[in-house]
Each structure stands twice: as C-alpha cells, then as structure tokens.
Length: 376
Image (cartoon, rainbow, N blue to C red; front, top):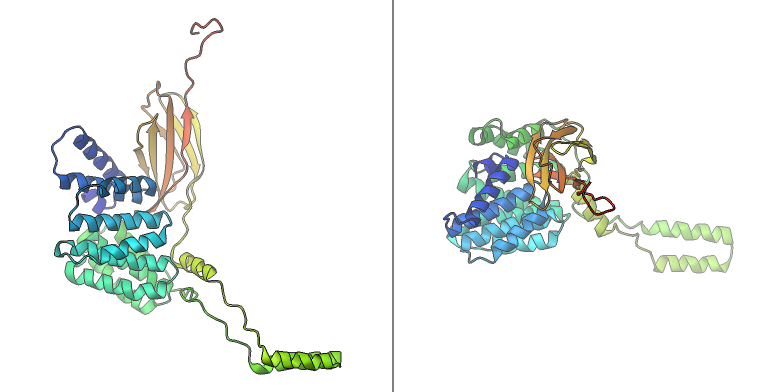
C-alpha cells in the first residue's frame, strides 16, 4: 500500500503479483486480504496503462461475497477502468450507483465515487456542470479526512486543473495556495503529486474557449432579410422578386447550431491532454542472453519510461524503470532457451498516465533438422 500511496507503481505491481502468487499457493490469508490484493493490483494495472487487465481483475472480484465498503470501493475502481477504456456513460452510471451508498462504513468510497462522477461529467463535455459538483465532493472529503489521504490531494489537483481549463483562475489559485503547502507535509516533498502541484502553479493563466456549453449563434435581425430581398428586387426588376420579399419576411431561416458531438469532443480535448505512446519501438539485437531495444520518445525528454518483459506465455514483469530522456535499454540475464521474449515500452507522463506502446517480440529459432531427419 505504501508503494501505491507514493505512486511507485512498478514496485507496487511486483509486490502485489508476489502476494497473489503466495495466496494462490496456499499461504494463509483472510478474504479481506485476498480482495485488497486483487483490487490494488487492478488499480496498479490501470495506472500502468493496462485497463483491460484491470477489468479482468475487477470482474473476478465482483463474484465474491462483498460487504458495503468493498462493494463501493470496487465500484470506484470499476468506474476508473471504464473511463480509461472510453466507456464514459457506463463509468458515470457506475459512479452514480456507488455515490448513493449510505452505509456508514462506506462513507470514504462513497465520497470518492461522488468525485469520480463529477470528473466523468467533465469528460463527457460538461465541465461547467462538473466544477460545482467536484468542488462539493472535494470540500466534503477535505472536511472529513483532511489532506493526509493521497486521494484527497489528487482530487484537489484535478479540481484546480478543471478550474483553470474553464478560466476560473482566481479560484484555481486559491485552491493551489492551500494545497501546495499542505501536500508536502503529508505526502513528502518528493511525491509526484507535489511536483504536479508546483508545475500547475507555475503555468501561466490561459483563458480557454467556453467549450462546456453549446452556444447557439444569435439569429440575424429582421432587417437583414429585408435588405437581401430588396437587393433581389432591384436586380431582377420583376414581380418574382416581390414574391421573394414576402417569403423572406414570413419564413426567416434560423442559422445552424454547432453539433453537440463537436462541442463534446472539443470539451474533452480542452482539459484532457492527449498523450502519445513511444513510437518506432524496435529490437536492435538479441544474443540469446541479452536483448537490446530502442524507441523514439514522444515526451520530448520529460517523462520516465517503464520496461515490461514477457517471457513465452508468462505474465509481464517490470524489467526496469528508466529516467526521462532514455531512448534505449539492454536487458540482460535472459534465458537462451526461451521460445520468445516480448518487450513493452510504457511512457510514464505522470503516475496516473502511463501510456504503453504495442509489444515487440523476438522469436527465437527452434531446433532445425537435416533432410535426413537428424539434428544438425
């Protein structure tokens, strides 16, 4: 849990996989331990950019006999998974149901679901509706739990980012003025969220377009249509033009309104930056016991890189976490008899936005035979 709180996701992944492996091999554990290990692993996979694997874990856990707290906290995880997969309507419904939980033991996940519901509303293209809802959720969390939980600081950071995207710079600055000194005291000065808050505070204020509401252009005034019809009369000089004038007065045509789909897409882009995966990922050399890989960095040298290694049909393991601006790596100590190694390069823009490129694989040659059938 400490690794997750510190946003050390590759390390958390390794520990949770080992814990589930021990539980699966007969190590004594309570049902709560089994549930927590599975849900936290799902959260870790989600943070590492693998929502499909996270969904598999969530579905597996949903079949268990869960209490009110477990049901609600699992619904929050499922909401995040659905949102990461782009199923925003389903995510909203999931959060909405969890936010209605009134059991006293489920208070914490219920408030988290309320915040998740508001963020989903923003992602659906209605940031103006989301801002007051997220503000209420944040203040309720803050009043009951303070800034000690990392989730409260993350929600406050999301709220500040949302306010800035809407041009609410004064309220965003006020929120940052509270979070920036409080977060280091509870999370530590080196925590990634503290660095996010510092970077957010240093970004210049930019008023973005009002994408949150569909704006209907005003209709042209009545005299506009009169003038058009009069010009037609002068040019044509016929009775037909007079008829056109009457038609113009009786049937003013309303101008087209912006497409709601276009407005929604623009709203999503205004506060959810697009992040690219590494490209041109390639295996430069495979010696049997080592594999050298290289890639092009889409972050401009600002994001760290996580390397996953998959041997044959085994689950992926974290092979390395590399500093920003790294564009190559050499994997060592590999099994020369393995049939295949696949490498996954993931760019960690920040702890909750890790974007993985498609796997690249090195397939080793199988033993060949001579025409007579005997091995060479």
